[in-house]
Image (cartoon, rainbow, N blue to C red):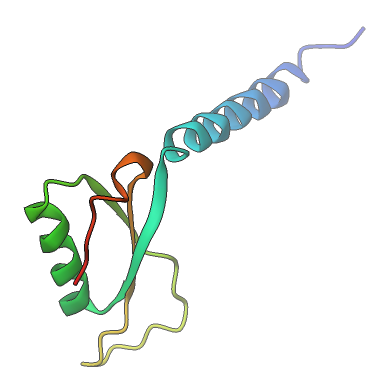
Length: 91
């Protein structure tokens, strides 16, 4: 009647939906705290958070216009836990 051909696409769709829901749940406790451009600014921000004992995550958004040059303008989005935002201080 229906055949078994529909099982795999439905199962795959369910796994994808579950993956994205889990990702949203795990990332919901984090807040974007600082965006640094270039490695020097990134290391300053991260070292300050480390010295304050604050956990952080870093995401680098996709950048399609990257050129190989000495001018490092890489964007680093730094996230801290929502309940630790008040403790974080980037100078």
